[in-house]
Length: 397
Image (cartoon, rainbow, N blue to C red):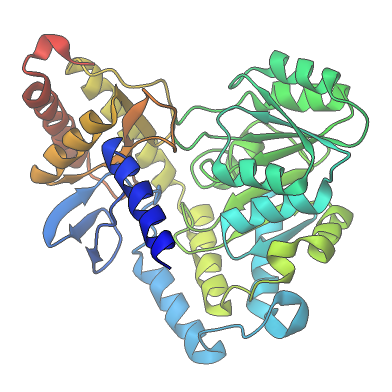
């Protein structure tokens, strides 16, 4: 037992030495754009609640009403007795939303990506993946046992070369649609053409594009006009723009049935509470029925970028709600995050191993629930924090 304690203390010491210890902040009350964090009021600029639905009263009411009818738990996995009519209705509505024959709901986005990849690929197969893919895609690839080939971020030609060099067996091309730490978008049409030409399968995780882009907010894949023939495997989450929890994979009927029968993260997990599925259905209805939320969000993104440029701040290229400010060192990111919180703005410091060493950043995310004045205030606070940390406006990033 003492050896375990010693090993953990040594590991924590290394984490502290590198400035990489993560601390959970306590949010009191709802998780909207105005929060109380560790007892301090702040404007939240580090959530994935892009459409401002996480604290929407209509979704809360749907959750409560469903819980009174169907209870708070599903009691079993989907393939035993955990599959409820609310799950079935949600899957049908998701499939219609993203233009696929069928959808399958998972409890989390991590479970969806790990389960889908490991269900379809094995040790005689090959996975070709973007260098900046989400951890769930990376871990699903590892668990599958397939050979892994990494291509330069966002480079369709490099993906083509990697597919050409892969050996026999099935080949899966895997990418995020919108990358969670950089906010940029994969060249989806080009990747779909590469996969078609090389007889490979394409999996796109549109978690950060759903609700924000495309017709009816159906995501970057829908925006690019890519059908199930081009993108046979489409995954997404329900805990970001939808304002609920859970995730899904969508595709043709036989593909989804094969995943249902073989995805271990689904088969051996208790199903999502059906009341959460009811909440997600309400969130989806709001997304489709209130396009003004997306319009307002995109206006805020443009406003933030214009304000940051005017203030002399360097923001990575992104037209999404994810606006990263690359600062380099871990301690710099932490200091700036703390300085912003002192000014009433909650912005997360993202450090290795989430991002590569030397690319620590402030990951600013915008929400349709923000006001223009909220964005303007953040820009001013960020500029002040930089000047305080670096000592002079001329040395802004």
